[in-house]
Length: 291
Figure 1 (tube, one colour):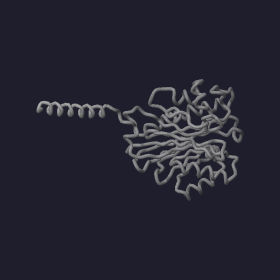
Figure 2 (tube, one colour):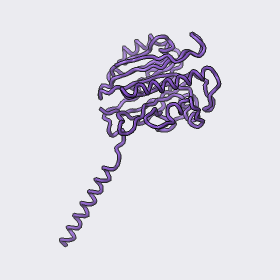
Figure 3 (cartoon, one colour):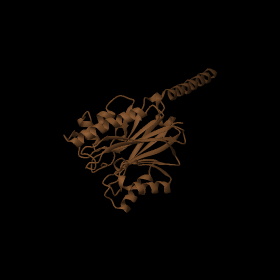
Figure 4 (cartoon, helix red, strand yellow):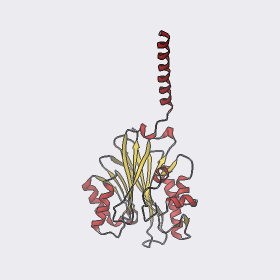
């Protein structure tokens, strides 16, 4: 009987030890190491909307995120400046109006502004012509809860540049191709001094682009390569909803995804925001960030 008790004790100890070993071997998820969260969003607000419909869309997307990239809002810069000041947000909407189209907002209670800039990329048809000149805007923030630097890059590519993932042979397509590479280069230049998020209307459908794989479009430039590199919400969590513009997923949130041992920020999920007056839906991505 005593021997049986000793065997039971040894067996129980072995089982506990095995359980501890098993737990220690299971890798922690990136989110498990983080101790703070925030959300980043993108929304193209159709510039033809009346003021009331514009305000509805602005308040809809800012109610759901802490960092927001907007498109087509250059003509609303004066209103956005007043709105941001009255509602506790930082606004970056640089001159000229074509650059202010790609405005950036950040909640003051969560972020401080460290630096900012606007990079001219291309102007397909010349000053004042359609489509407008393209700029890649960026702001470097300090995330207050963790002290980490977070870059938010925002862009809007030319429309009508692809057909089912295939490039259209147009000057505006060449301009967009130049912008995609410039955006990738900008993200790569910033990644050593902070965490990087990229947002915007890129006017290329995610699934069609991935299937066709044109080398100068976002899938190949941003995602079809080894880490560390940019990864989109659709790459990580699939395409949700019916699309962000009709049935196409053309509005993106990316982040610079690092090798696991160097990760300080992780995208944990995303959602598509409907109910807009614009011809686009918004995208909101959730992040965790470590201190």
